[in-house]
Image (cartoon, rainbow, N blue to C red; front, side):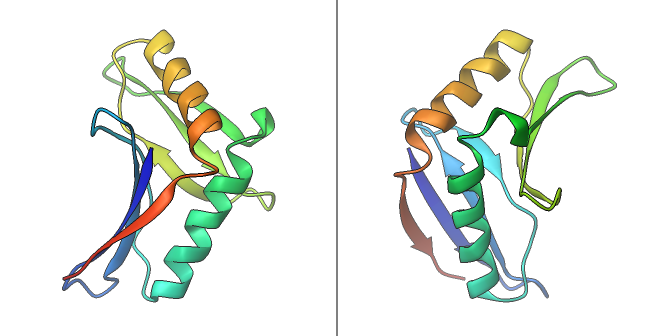
Length: 110
């Protein structure tokens, strides 16, 4: 697993995504104004993804499954992509718990 820190031309140009070994996005962030804030978000996901209590399990209106990773203050620091089943979502969580904390950060410029 790796983390891609992206910079765009947007007003809040920094965001990140945790990418699995198959190249699929597992979790992505909101947009941040500052690079340092995005890096802090990455560290928060790495730290909080180990704790079952930091996961918020969700189901979308179209029947897809996803999750949020929350910081200790309750703020959402990452949202997963949509999964066809709860089992696929749970497998992504297991992979994030296992590989997320040690994921290397790769930067992609604007």
